[in-house]
Image (cartoon, rainbow, N blue to C red; front, side, top):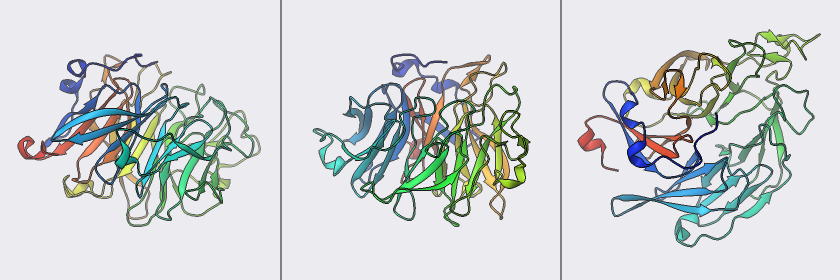
Length: 360
């Protein structure tokens, strides 16, 4: 289901229909950004927003207590992924990664992005990228499978990492169908990522996965093994799921689990500390839609998923989407931002009395 071509007007956003747990509040943080997708936070409080269907990267700027949206870069091709480190914004397009240095000092007149890595495949299927910077000060970028369920070559179905100048790029894991969100556990520093399962097998399987990398070189099963326990009917002949790393949790069939972040702030209650907050974009080919929400995945001591509970709901009404969450981002004050590419907006979730929580 394609999103509307233009972003929803602020008074047309579904904010009043969105539900969060008792004690939480939700408000519009910024609107008017067509196809708002991945989120990154600058040192000076700028929120950078990537897009997939338009050619723009946006910057949400706080000025004199008011927020305004600027177009930071345009003329890009599927600039879905954004990451920020030490004053530099990194942008992932379909087949390349570029950077804008000292970006927050030049928001009114930003320089053109400089390409640092251009050796990514050009496949449209699962070609849009999520990127992030690891605790090892490396830039991490995935490449999805170039189709629904394919026996891909060595350049696809993987996550790689590289230096900030694009050098020393290395593949760290394979068997990844399509991840559009990952983050490092605050204590173990292990990389967790969401992975979207294949289509057209059935309405209820396979489920999307929450995976964890424990060592370089792991293979997470795609396209041979699905959700850790189903041998793929097409490519799994002669294979066993025991040959691959199983997911640490399952995130619902066709739910399109995308952006995820571990919550490390102090604003939310203690039960949320170090839990994974995951945006599920929602199913597109299932009779009864699932997803279109933000969930909390709490982990066991061994790092596997203990429970998954709803956190932000209301985007799904009468089996139709009135919004599609894509990414989540924790702000310095512990509040949480959620992007919605259907409405071209970003929402802010706070905890506590709205009067105090409303100040940014």
